[in-house]
Amino acid sequence: MSVPTNTYQFYQQVGVKENISDVIANLSPRKTPMQNALGNEKVTQPLFQWQEDSLRAVAANAKIDGDDASYVAAVPTVMRSNYTQIFAESIVVSDRADVISTYGRKREFAYQMAKSAAQVKRDRENALVGTAGSKAAGSATTASTMAGFQTQVASSLVSYMGAATNLTEAGLVTALQAAYTAGADPTRIHVTPANSVVLAAFASAAGRYRTISDAGDKSTTLVNVVNLYVSPFGEQKVEINRFQKDKNTLIFDPDMWTNITLRPWERKDLAKTGDSTKAMILGEFSLKHKSFSASAIVVDNATSGF
Image (cartoon, rainbow, N blue to C red; front, side, top):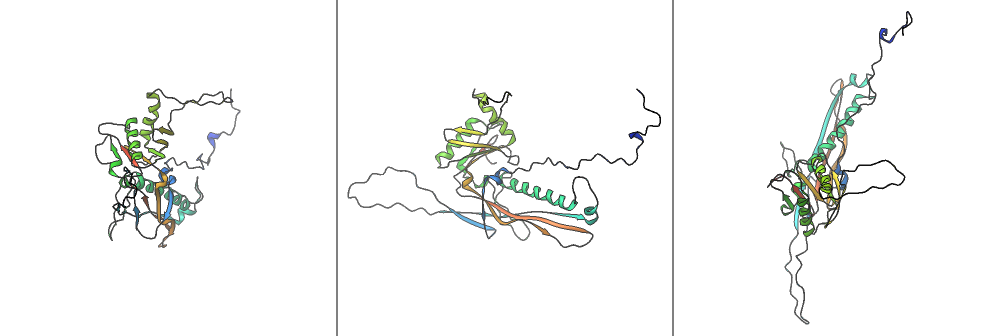
């Protein structure tokens, strides 16, 4: 095969447009399971408080006919509190960069703002479940911080698995039992990516399996996931959280937790001081556990601490 004489070929062309995709793929994780699972409450102060109460232990209760009344010792409520935490990220884009033609986005400033919005949302999820952070009031020189999930659970409901390097089913069931005994009815189990694989292996290790049948579908589906765990203490939906603190498994009822908002997310346009545009994404949030005995945690490969 030969090419005709004087054929003008691609290899001779000058100024060929680069084959750059007009879609910029951002593979960074954006899902925030804990934020998405909880309801929302507005507060008006950085320090917010709530009261926690519980019923007395059950007792034998039989009275003699005509007996005088006896009085129970009243127990005061427990005052709980947390602080809101400011999340912010600022960007500055030169005005020239914002007007030139680019692949993948129309305006550089808008693209960078969208990235920052996703980034600070991830930071908030990390503060909720990724750091086991404690509350702090802050000062003129230090930021206030909120107590995360781990530090709002009663110590009696935190199970440490000692030398176990991974989550075990026995450890999970023990924590569920402890929560149930304390009066809780958890409906969610949040696991790290590593422990999601461990949880999926529970069924195969015990010889249990799940069958999916569809008479109209001749394809074969291999299922290796646990998305609903049924224990003697109820049913729990299982979800993976990329941002969850390593080795932590969280057991909870979303109705017993609330996202707290002092200031919702907003864009603040900052003063223009030259040939650039500046802005900030900012929000102020926290977390409330209505009862510290309503959730449980399993911490593998540890004897104390998160």
